[in-house]
Length: 116
Length: 112
Image (cartoon, rainbow over all chains, first blue to last red; front, side):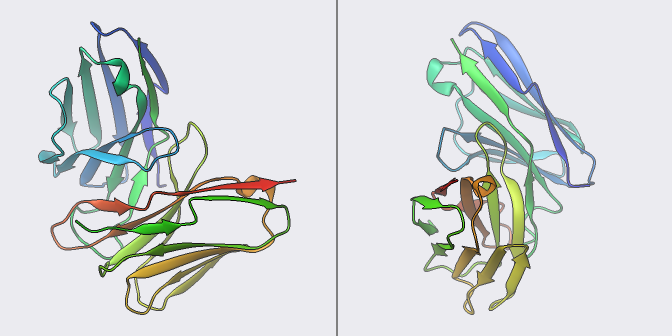
């Protein structure tokens, strides 16, 4: 089973709203990631959690706030977003962070976010 | 900054034709993954290659990792409309680097 589950699949929110994206994996992976993807472009890394600790923040604006409650769950809290933040948000996981060869990253189906 | 150059960026072919997508870098990678993505969905892993010179086959898809682990190719034989999608190569440099370097993607359209 190589499944990463994301909810919701679609989200429309106003610029003053607070919402959250959720991600879950039960593969025992210890690295979890948030990526942002615009149409027809490759995913862009936002955050990396390694063993439930934030290890990389790619200079993401503070209106995006990640949270890793346990080794299976990853959340992305959204507040005061801008229309240009509309995109596909992808959660991903891998067995062990930074283990190099063969440490494949598995993606969820994504959450389509529209900010109005 | 490690770069992964993927080509071609766009490819429109007829059903039954063959095609090859290339992924090249001046850097050595410890592993390289190929993903296929349909509109509105997340990237789906096709294969991971790890060993220089490695060749892997997945039905009509053949993946190759260069001997020096700096480049890779994806060859599709007798393409079908169901092969339509965005193909992404992504490489891992290993060590403590958690980042996956992505190519810009190849948007493939197979016309019936």
